[in-house]
Length: 455
Image: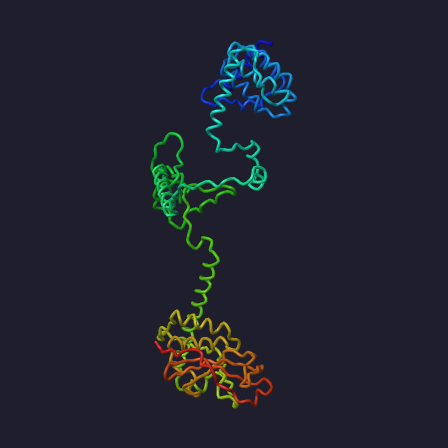
């Protein structure tokens, strides 16, 4: 059993220290040493190779001091065995290290063997020559590897600055980006070559079976329950086909399924755009309906239009602006009546939508009249009011800046004025005093909207 343990230790040492491509120091085994391993090393030490013996002895310098004190007996026994070795390098090294476990220093008084004394003296002389040649170099303690810059200066003083002989030229960022893009394009091309699989998954499994004209396709649901591409019989009508059975819950259809564009989920921007287009279409339809209504009025009863179908308008004597309230007019539509096509441009639609967004006094018939005028309707439905008709859009209290740079809360009205002679329209703002609305004289200011010409 002991022989097996010694052979295992010897094999382990040869595997760790027997290679010739590493350095002479064998500090890699220090972490795996303990008292039992050191006792096994002492028993198998004479059987080791010379190179392994030397590396093993040199590895003792890498053992921490607390472990050296703990394993002092085992280390001294190994050094005693090594001093009796037939190889002079091994015996000389062991004789120089025999005081290391006890004192932590080397033995310089080598006198047991004359040959060892000669080798040791030659070694010391060579070391002295090397030290004389490198007098300008200063050796730092080993613990300097673990010190930061300030601590290193406190321990060994200020070190001389190294001379910078050259500067490495780095490649520009553009070259690195270009190389990265080329690499990505190469990878993408290679992936495209590798991916030769079809986009439509093949659902056939196993050996392909013989196809006939009555065999239904697996991936495409059949329209006729009997399956296949058989033509229906002459006695069967297309309307008398049996309904398709629904798939049970939890079952998925195979093959390819086509989705309508309208069935796809809409994002916020698309939904907002669709809602806006619907509002523009509704305003366009309202303008067309108003124009058709005016045309029907003139064609059915042009003489009595002012007496019978004239809406009730509220005219204020204290204001030069007429407030219009249009009532819906019902007229019989004839088959011979043809409606003239009126349409708004996109700019007119957007302007009308913005104008009606802040309007709080205009009614639906008045909106239809305004949209019809903007679209090009020049038939005045109220000839008794003249060629210029004004409709109130909004009425809001606002702080108005006076001439003395003071602000006063007043009633601001916005009106839409239509000129049926020239086809021009504009928005007018009026300011009235809240305290005396009935007696105050309106002030007409701020022509906001530009004139529009009939199309």
